[in-house]
Length: 127
Image 1 (cartoon, one colour):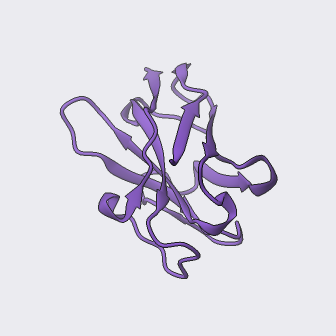
Image 2 (image 1 turned 90 degrees about the horizontal axis):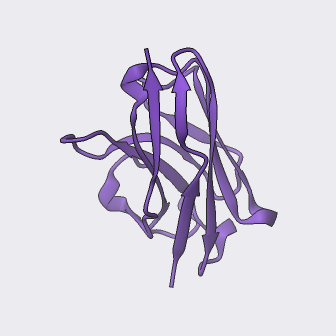
Image 3 (image 1 turned 180 degrees about the vertical axis):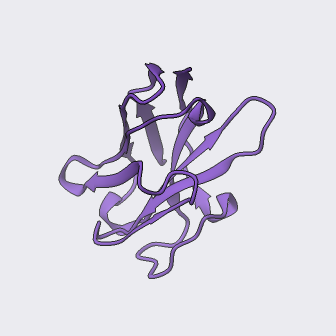
């Protein structure tokens, strides 16, 4: 059974940085594209970033492009989200998930294309 555990969230001042981690188990981690999503109170879950199963390609939402960096360490079965120059509108619960299709050659920003959602980690950015 797939288990994804997010960590690294917390309170940060606007302009600061945080690094989130997503520890994976119960799947062949290196075979799956990974994605980060976030959800603010009362809002829909929205796409943040994705990385290919090989780690060679990345994809970002326009709202975080140039500020956030997604990466992965397949040996550690962990995905990361480095967040820089953070803004109050980045405040949300951040989740990671795996693409439903193993070794997919396409990128998707649609939440229904992902599975194995973790419980999330809270990120709060103060102004």
